[in-house]
Amino acid sequence: MSWRNWSGRHVARGATLVQAYSDEDVQSLIRSSTGPIRAAGSGHSHAPLIPSDGLIIDTSALSGVIDTDAGTCRATVRAGTKIYAMGRPLHDAGLALFNQGDIDQQAISGATATGTHGTGQQLKNLSSAVTAMTLLTADGTELQVDAHTSADVLQAARLHLGAFGFVTHLTLQCRPSYVLKQEGGSEPFSAIQKDIAGRIQRHRHYEFFWYPQDDVAVWKSTDETDEAPVYPLAEEGSRCGWSFEVLPNHRPHKHTEMEYSVPAERGLDCFLEIRDLLHHQFPEVRWPVEYRTLAADDVWMSTAYERDTVTISIHQDVREDETAYYRAAEAIFLRYDGRPHWGKVHYLNGEQLAERHPRWSDWWRVRDRLDPDGRFLNPWLADLRPT
Image (cartoon, rainbow, N blue to C red; front, side):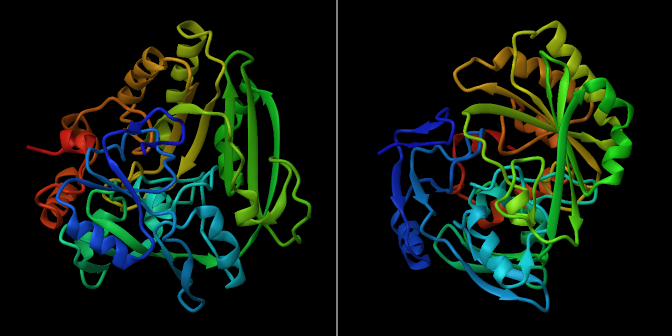
């Protein structure tokens, strides 16, 4: 049986795919295997993070919210838990995630492993919410990771790319559950451009998808409210409900995606160059460009490490060759000091990534201490490893 990611673009045909049903099962698999090991969630990454010629362990059965603490607003979940399966159990305990992305199909360990995020000028990515984790190392030893016992490991492993070991549990900082009201519409891009800073400032969440062939942007604003949820939930852009009901959306169309994070003050200028690129060099592209915001954090490999950020995402149908378009866009992103999303397409090597991540060598130092033989690296990650 071969493994493939959500879009079907990345396939691992030479690996052994095994489903694990318990922590003990994972430990036994690690100890009995001699080759590379990767953990697979929902496979929503557009980057080749999973494919390996060794063992791929399916985490989908390692699911569930196993503990909540209303006093600290923290929750411990199994690593394979899909984000959509966390909303109701957390809500029943009076809790919610601070934020989440546009899609909620990912396993929480994969989402935190790649710096998955939503939008919001004051809101950070999911990795920043990780306060502790349980990690199985290369010999199957269980390691409890938190700020008190292993601060450097926590700082590095909050965004771990599956390269530190096998994560079995995550503890997340949450907040009391809350209701969101969402509004949306479409306008010529010129109208949004005039007031983009104000719109971002006025709303908890503000984002838009710009459609190049029409030069029209479809926007959404989402804010906390004291109003009661309205059921049945309306369509995207006009909802009022609990946060886990309002933020995610159904995105069934298979595509590839490149996303870069640029300093917030340069976001609009960068977007305008991408807009110009599409109008003049790639007028045939129909897929939209997404514009979101993200607060600075202290996660070592985060694309928002120590800087407020604008994220710009470009898309293409998975049946099309996106290479020329993406490489031309990447050249623009790099001129704006962009950092690529870890779960999406980019063409950078290790040296180029090191230039963009101030804690690059620290991250690898901690990773190599835990896994010196590189059992949790696949060929793509191994090529990025400093020599």
